[in-house]
Length: 98
Image (tube, rainbow, N blue to C red):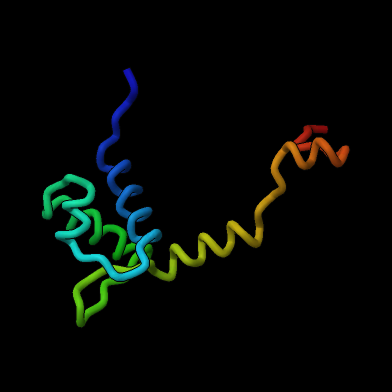
């Protein structure tokens, strides 16, 4: 039986939803889309906001991607290692120990 960690899974789903949105999203909209209670959605959004992964627009009370998430995505792209397949075809090694 697969392990179901609902809070981490819902948190990731919430962040992915905000990342993929082309506009700001509100608590009700997020809760409805993920089939969760508004109170659960609010707690998830609050945790993401406290860690700067998302930002809440004070005037609209809706959420957008935050600086911390932007930085992680930027670092991931700039510091990305090539995939093992590309390394193998180049003759280099992938994490080989001495």
